Amino acid sequence: MSEKRLIGEKAILRSITMEDTPLIVKWRSLPSVYNHLYTRGPLLAEQHIKWMQTRVMTGQCHQFIIEDAKTGMPVGSVFIKNIDYESKKGEYGIFIGEEAARGRGIGSDAARLILSYGFKEIGLNRIYLSVFAKNRIAIESYKRAGFREEGMLREDYYADGQYDDILLMSILRKEWEKAE
Image (cartoon, rainbow, N blue to C red):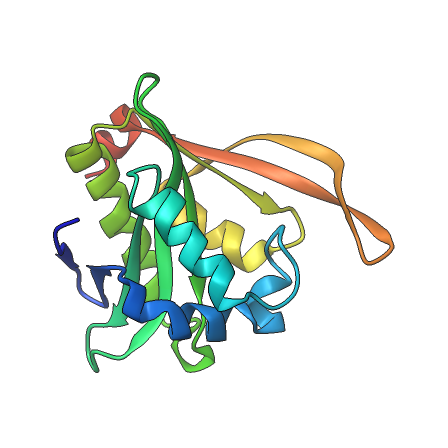
């Protein structure tokens, strides 16, 4: 895969590489990150390498490292996975691993960059996500990026002795174009 760089005001996205494995493992092993994901608990390097080989290198996932545009420091990752090229849709995901980078608009800028990439470069018509309904901070960030609520999967996820509702959100190409 060729190196891609997407430059925004607060975030720079660069193509993920195998050399980023230690960063991804570090971030994905933080409870402040994995408690908002379906896969709970620390990530092993072998798991990330397998992800890179089976998803990223095959084009099923377009994943980027998010860098702080001011400092150049890597702070997280954003991606579109589960890409269905026939139906022109893909699933959005993001995490900010560096706590100091949270709440500064870097994630929102990264979302805008990857949505543009997904619609213009990949040619998608629909980008969707699922989020824990109790994760209000993430939901507000997704709304700022243009995602709309589609529905609720009530008590859909069970972990740590409790059920959680899952909110489904999406943005369509025509909605994104209108907002641009």
